[in-house]
Image (cartoon, rainbow, N blue to C red; front, top):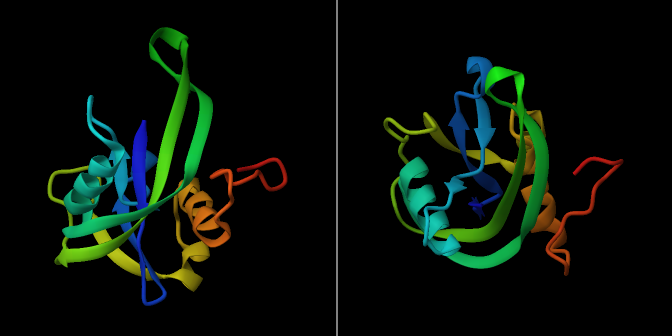
Length: 148
């Protein structure tokens, strides 16, 4: 289980940058894994602060994204991984933009919404922006051309 924030202000989306697989940097939504017993809204607030320096207020649940993949494991085996990601809308209430130190990301920045498609980014950003724009009543972004 993980929880992520879509924070849009003045036509810009708050993102963090991760080193990515193979060291190729990619943009990610601020957020991450829930700790045992942690409320998902607390996860979002904690992760956004850790990764960007901002305090945020969760203003709504945009949706849930579920993914299942076979991932490589030790000794030639694979792991059947099922990830459930809660996507929230949030707004900045305090703090100052800063980069995370010794964490999973190395840069935090506001990116203009119209430039996001040109960024090297994880797929969850596109899914989250669809949820933010479309606000489907089911809280699920329907697949487009067989892809979520």
